[in-house]
Amino acid sequence: MQNWKNKFDRIEVRFATVVLLIALVFATLFIQPVIVRVFGTPLTLTYQADYIDPGSELFGVLTIAQIPVDELPPSIRALYEMEDFDEAVQLLNEETFYITLQEVNGITVRDQVVLSEPSADYIIATFDWFLDKQLVDWNEDTPWQDRYTGIKLRLDTVQRYFVPTNLTNAQRFAIEQGTATARYVLYQGNLYLIDPLL
Image (cartoon, rainbow, N blue to C red; front, side):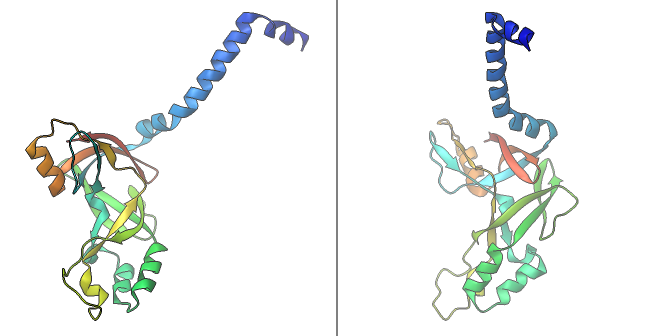
């Protein structure tokens, strides 16, 4: 013990200890991104945005999160048969959705939406809100099922990034149409944005 105290009295040992502690603190900041990139699955996904302002941030929506009613599991489609709109939304909010994936021409697309954890790669999602209103004009007597064509799921990833000022018309059109792509990494059911490819 005395030897250790004597060694710690030396300025070189104290300096090395401080440097090591600082390095450990910074390592903890970078360890998750490193693990995600090393062990995650790289994906190329399409995204869409309504509001595009070159030189500012863009809030995109991944197209795999927009689910038409006929692509939902039967148990979720059954909720659309319920008369009580609020009760149906409450039940949707209680579900965990798993989006399975497949690759088509280098782009990752949605394969299925299931309610139990699949053995293949999947993205964890929760209910966000209805995707599209089916009728522009509707009244209180219209069944709520006739107002909507699908749902949008919430993914635990930030779809926000800087739009360059030299955005071309073709790039803007691709973003508006939902054909613009971005690189992601899928790790433990969550997506991490790597690079928006405009």
